[in-house]
Image (cartoon, rainbow, N blue to C red; front, side):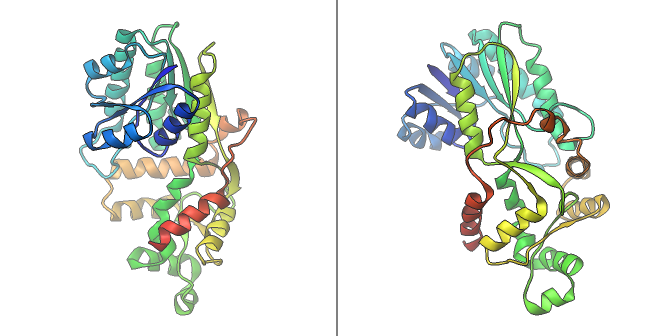
Amino acid sequence: MKIIVTGSLGNISKPLTQELIQKGHSVTVVSSKPEKKSAIEQLGASAAIGSIEDVAFLTKTFTGADAVYCMLPPFDYFDPTLDIMVTTRRQIGNYCAAILASGVKKVVHLSSIGAHTDKGNGLLAFHHLAERIFKELPADVIIKHMRPVGFYTNLYDFKMSIEGKGFLGMFLTLRFSGFWSLLTGKRGVIAANYGADDVIPWVSPKDIAAATAEELTTPFVERKFRYVASEELSCNEIARIIGEAIGKPYLKWALMSDKDMLSGLKMFKMPESRARGVVDMNAGMHNGIVNEHYYLNRPKVMGKTKLKEFAKEFAAAMAK
């Protein structure tokens, strides 16, 4: 098959490209960065250098393909000029226009857990919008929506508080572990407005790539969604596994209030509307709204990569 992969050489697109090539498929990787061309070609893929903001470029790239994998580029949540819903509508619209013009009939779209609703999921509402726009394509265009759960790599967002360094790290340690922790050097905590005993499904980007490769290369019979997960763990279990891997066996995951979470994000200069979106997303994980549809459609088979394996990568990254 001739398959187009968007997302350059990101955490999902790179292993996806590698797996598709290993299976004998012809892969073209879309990247906006000319400097990625050589690395893409070293994998055995062709490089299409251009922007998803350019419908003519996308159309030319998609033409003749058997299937395409479409994903939105990561957003800069600290950009005060960014309107996520407007950007999503435009970029998914570009994909749809190129799909129609090129005649592609098989599409796999990277969506997310929480995409089943536009209520109570905070920032994740843009995934619901993306799926809704794709549904407007003619019925003969078969779309498979991949809905991965929380990425293991999201845990890197807690690096500063886990280290217990700087004002944030010391403040959170003092707030949730007490003054004695500072005196004994047992600094560091994970804190958010979800956590503690909350059971959260998690996934490795490698497992998302494997599931996506499977969907790209198996028959496109009808439109569908597929949740992808590697493991379901309580946040306390996550803290224990990560803590043991980095030499902080006392590490715990504290549950913050929505108010405190919002204050913390604003302190780091995240635009208030965006910060409220993060708080609402986290609150949706805590109260179950974000994960409710996942549990009704839980994957029959979990991914191979478990948190203990990822924790080794996490520990190596923390040591740098």
